[in-house]
Image 1 (cartoon, rainbow, N blue to C red):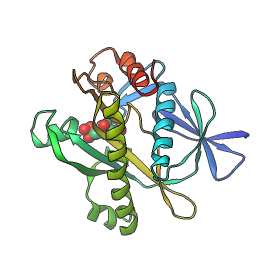
Image 2: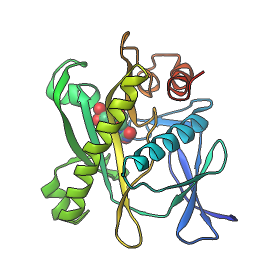
Image 3: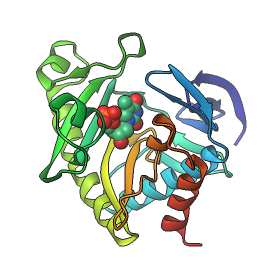
Amino acid sequence: MEIKEMLYEGKAKQVFATENPEIVMVHYKDDATAFNGLKKGTITGKGVINNRVTNFMMQKLEGEGIPTHFVEELNDRDTLVKKVQIVPLEVIIRNISAGSFAKRFGVEEGIVFENPTIEYSYKNDDLGDPMINTAQALALKLATPAEIETIRTMAFRINDVMKAFFKEVGVDLVDFKLEFGRLTDGTIVLADEISPDTCRFWDSKTHEKLDKDRFRRDLGNVEDAYQEMMKRIFGA
Ligand code: TMP
């Protein structure tokens, strides 16, 4: 498929048009940012890992009946996906307290919840992605009531599938962020990425952090953590 002009450049990815108006190509970069772009850096090899991990998870989820934007992995860093209109909500599911949850509610990290939580952020860099509730999202017409219900149901199902998968490879799925998009016919599909950039992964035994928190918090061995997640998922 012929790749055309770049449509959009984000912090970690670029999106290109293709000859098919319904399909775009995502290119994964090694650039890393945190705190809404305040902290910048490079994680060597991250783009390759996030591309492969995302595509693996998307295909696994498709197999479990969850519609995604995934079409075809072209190479180490490039993947064809269905063109969607992104719903401007970041959907965050948590199984264990960490990050902004621990900070906001004044609790330690590592409390295992009896039931997962769901929360939303309004995807808006100028505002710093503020937390938003579903009534507020409806007031701002970010999504319809039916779309929000679909997104919520899909997000919890995705958590069930992912939690079980990562448990098998010795990793606790602490929390993660999802984004959803609308196809031209309005169908809601899982979009964006599922990777160590967008999930918190802790080794089940040692509780070692195997995700972007190593970059956010200057913990060192950032590349090693991404490589370790590759190993866990794909084997040696
Ligand atoms: P938080 O604890 O900082 O709210 O993050 C919750 C999860 O969402 C964590 O797995 C990291 C992910 N996340 C993103 O993917 N993008 C973001 O911009 C932020 C703030 C968090």
